Length: 288
Image (tube, rainbow, N blue to C red; front, side, top):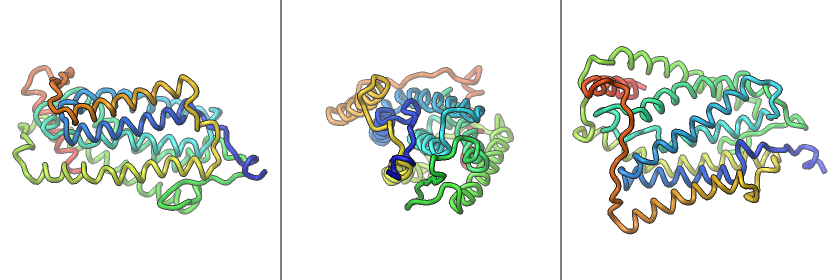
């Protein structure tokens, strides 16, 4: 009876089962394509960006409305999912960054900077901004069950405020070096490419911990109504994510993808300008 009294009616439109599984499958597909099929990763990058941008906008709208039908702990689940969506796109192929900045690359760079202050806001104010749980007990996951508003909250405030300040430094280097250096192809720099590979091979562990954080936070707080694939709104993202993963596996299994890299609109007027702008982003990322 106590569990029923403390249960929360979850918002399946934000983190229903179909959305979560579809996201997990999309992240796996992106990671595999980035590791083995760079030409496929380039085409999948835009869909990852669209999903990330849609979720970020929805969360920002909810953050402006204290009367939104959203519990504080649900915000934690949504932020965990947002962090996961940055995983396959956070470290783009370095040749792209340094050899010509396209629109998705630029948006991901600035979204990664904008996300950190939003996450800091959640831990400073958001946990008290939305509705408390019915029993006043809210839990999150950090390798174990932790109180959402206890010492864990203070730890997260320190971490994300520091990262937000660090993002300002990234922007400083971006504008400082924009146009001051020519771009360089990172494939010619072994240390950069080795770091890229290390990050890719660490991705499964980060992904596993992130999935645990999402699913156990839902479990700890007795969130119901987000565990079914029966509705169309849950079935569609599940099928889309499954389709992307099967496509990548098929291409890996049967060899040549025979797909040309997508060409996205550039931010500069000519190639030289794009090279300089890309170099500025690369320098800002390197210092961050």
